[in-house]
Image 1 (tube, rainbow over the protein chains, first blue to last red):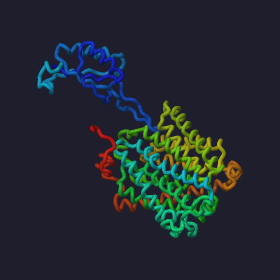
Image 2: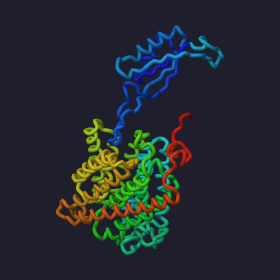
Image 3: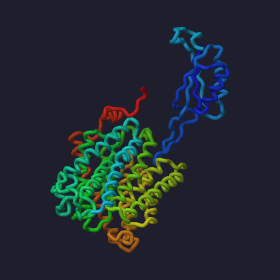
Image 4: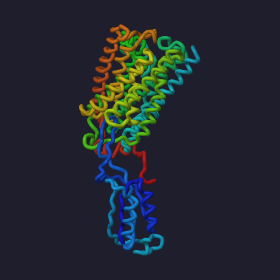
Length: 113
Length: 410
């Protein structure tokens, strides 16, 4: 089991969701986050005072998948979020030690999908 | 007595109340961080309560009561003794004396509230209360008497201040600067940007200020007449010019016109036209709006950063500087053709009026600065003006008011 964490541009969320549904990855957690990468922040100006490097709005998706879904998930997120510019985001893949479905108590791979 | 005049002055009084709450409260409240918004709303709200009472008990009598050597009113009208339905011809012959009194009460309320912008996000609530009462009593009341009170020494000299450029804006603005310097910068001021937490609140507040200001300026005619209409038109014209000018200046200077800029410019325009609105023609009102936008922009966006004081919400940069510009320009653009009770300014060949305006300005700046310094030292010694650093970081809402404006989880 792996946890795929994707940080994407907020306006790409719908496209990414469509691509994930196409490869039958339907379960995810989505949060609004702030972040700063190669794109840097945006300069904000308040009464003439410039404040460079404000954090940018991003969307984070947490997707837990079984091994054979890892690559399709990565590909789907990439297809949905890619524009080729800095700021498109990043995908992190980490080991997932355990997964428990609270309603049934099921554990492991069967609890993920 | 004139029922139209009375109706207008009572309505105008309610409009001026609207300037403090919710106008100024939200204008300032949106500019602070989310952890301090309630402290600002509380300070504005409680000032309305406290100064309304101070005014009835003795403030009105000190400011407008029977003159004592041109420097202060006596306490003869304390508790509003003798201030009733009968008009007082020294101030307004066609409305009840009590209507004039309550109109002036709203001015007494908003003036100390303007100063909140200088000490926002770092003042102790009890210290704020004590400071406000002392400042209203020992700075606002005497100054109002000098400029507006029957027998006041600046009034006798012929100084022009139609609706309170000197008494309200210069006095509060200068006091704000002194406080900002004495109190020091907010924690972290130099290291990371302190951003407004809710600009829509600020715009809402600015719009309510603009709306209420018609009561402030046009109401100062104290009658529903041509002069009130003149003041109304000038107020709107200068404000529109200043709001647009500020947006254009920063568009050129920084690349984007901002709503905070347009709103700040509009408030600067309102401040500058305040002393002038009953004395100038509409084209000169427009010019006043444009000039004040330039000067206040420089004060707020350039000078403040260079000089390094933390006037949190630009109480000095907008009200002190804007009030000064307005007072001086009144001495230039005033004309008797607009208001026979006024005087001709520099532009109409009268140097004397301009001289008096400069004198009023210097007197007000020196008086307000010294008195604020003294009151600060007294309050600081008695209670301490500034909150502990730990409490400042946690925020004033939780540490001074024990409540929070926004919840993270329901």
